[in-house]
Length: 109
Length: 113
Image (cartoon, rainbow over the protein chains, first blue to last red):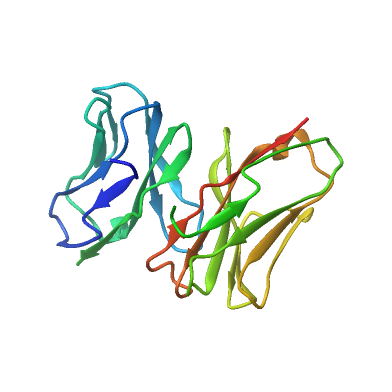
């Protein structure tokens, strides 16, 4: 993997559903993986910064895991709420700081 | 190459100086967003331009200003620089004003000494 990739590009779920999305990144020269929650024209909210292989972090209903050897991270949202609707960005900090294209989540009431 | 070009990639300057950061959006994109990433404050939205006009303003200091030119490239001017202005400055572009299909540039790393 040469770039930071995220999948899916967009996602629509019902309120109460749990969901997850993926960030894939080059595993060489890795320093840290950042997850942000981003609403348009606002400052992205930093969710997690992970550095170690096997890291798992949790913040309320949101959690994330990191695999630096294979170059991926998962973000999980348990019991999605309408207010979770946003774009979820990951960014890899290494030789460069590179953002992924984001996953746009819409939670339908 | 994301299609969003930021120059310069690195910049070292002294306190009190003024610098200009440049962003060329992806071809066809009308909106440009500027962000500041610092160690202590994370990624902060500064300002958005859409087709040459200011669309939204975030946590942008009065010492900072920006503009978007007719060819849609944008410049972020930082003046009376302070040590605390050292950060990564990112721009992102999108086709419209709603950040659909946005793309981030690779950033300018500013160091104020």
